[in-house]
Image (cartoon, rainbow, N blue to C red):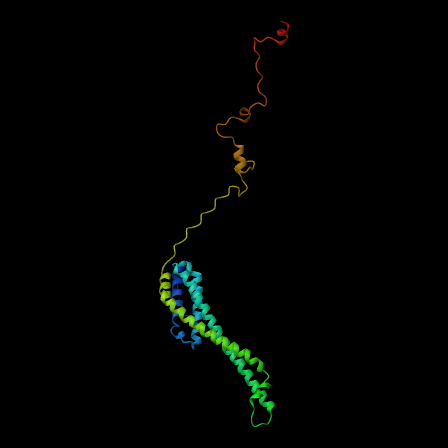
Length: 251
C-alpha cells in the first residue's frame, strides 16, 4: 500500500509542527480502513491497515516527545494493534499455502492410484491405501484446521480491540495530544573549568591546588620556627640564696 502524501511540510518550521502534520495524515490513513476491515474476508484491507498502523507507530516513536503525554500511550496502543493485525496476516498467508500443498498432493495421489489400477471400470475406496502421500494428509489437514480456528479467534480480538480504542477515544485524544507541545527541557549546566587542564597549576613550581594551599601560611600566623616549642624545657635559673650541697654538709 502506498503511503498518503503529507502536504504543507516546511523545512524552516519547528519539528513539532511538521511532525503534527505527518501524524494527522497517518492517523487518518489508519482509520480509513474501517469498517471495511471489519469483514473477515477483506484480507487486503486488514493487511493494509497493519501497514498503516506500522507507519503511525514509527512516526510517534520518533517525534512523540514533542507532543502531549498521551502520545506515549498511543505508541503502545498502536503497536498492539499492529502486532495483532500481523498475526492475522500470518494466518492469511499460511492458510492458502497449506491448502495449495494439500491440493497438489491429492492431485498427485489421484493420478497415481488411477494409473496403478490399470484398465478397470471402477475403483474401490480401498485403493486409497496405495496413495503415496496418504500419511501426509492428516498432518496438513490438522495444521489447516488449527490455522483457521486461530485466525477466527484473532479476528474476534481485533474487532474487540478496535471497539475498545473507540470507547477510549484513541483517535480524538491522539489528535489533541499532537496539538500540544511538551515543555522544553532546561539546558544542562556547563561543567566547571579545569584549572589544571593546560598543565599550569596555581603554584609556579607546578604544585597542585592542595599542595599550594598547604604551602601557603595562614594570614596572621607566626613563622613555623617561632610557633614550635623547643625540644627540651628551659633550664631552671639558680636561686642566689641557695647553699651548695657541699657547704651544707660541712656545717
